[in-house]
Length: 74
Image 1 (cartoon, rainbow, N blue to C red):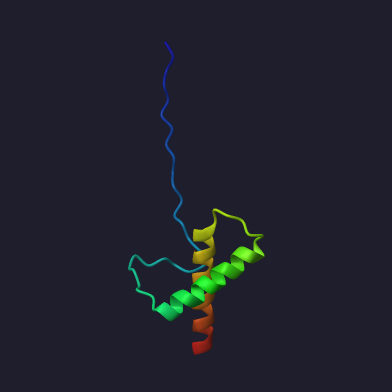
Image 2: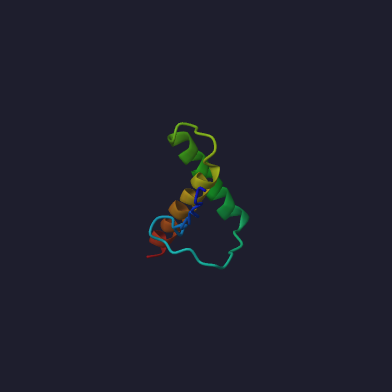
């Protein structure tokens, strides 16, 4: 009789860049969404128009836009 083994998959926490992800949701203004969308589109173009990475492009664009805002405030 064959013995069944159970595999346990450990999920690694998702982290983008070095920024910690807050459990709170922040409502973005329309102008902020527009800036992020524009940057995400630029990233999509730079990455060779690869489909299926829209969330990755958006999250990376959020980080880039937020870092630029933070740097401008310093």
